[in-house]
Image (cartoon, rainbow, N blue to C red; front, side, top):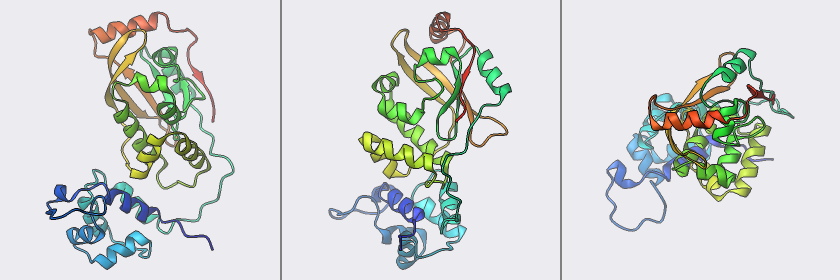
Length: 282
């Protein structure tokens, strides 16, 4: 019989190994053989028995209370406890119909018109971080921002895309954390399996970050890009949910007005290829 998935236990172990004793006020009197906290330390700080916590990590307890999970989230220093609660609610995992193909993603016509009309680099990002549509200025900002591309694949595997980010490590961490939030507990989704398998084989950095189980919002941020034609660009990135879709987002890069970066972006727009918006259905 195949072993039952234990996503909750994997997540607890991964996060436990990232918390040092010093950050939770525990003294370190001698060398430790394990990274992060021991199971019994998490249990003690959470106010539960070591045996009960062990059962959680091993997948032998099916109904942890919200109070217990929130106590554990506090000890593990989780900024957002919702993913942990979601994993517990899905444990044991619900039986889901296996899809031979991922659900098709498309861009609403009104959103495509908006992307074409925006004076800033803009594109549509799907649930799996596929680029579903983009305007010419987005492609001028990065040649990977075109329909058919995938943000995870490009950020982890394309050296030119990596060089675009002045702090690539932080950008990669945030992107992957947002991907985990986007897919939630659907780790057996065929497209997720395909992407994670490909990137795990091709990128040591991806393997390391994936094992951390970081989860974060798909949110706006302040980015600094080193563009090969116009130089350094400090841009604000917005990520806005597209209504009526499942995880599709409008992404816009924009500068502060009346700045050197605004002038550089205007220059980039002056020779961006015309043609409105390009889109593709997945």
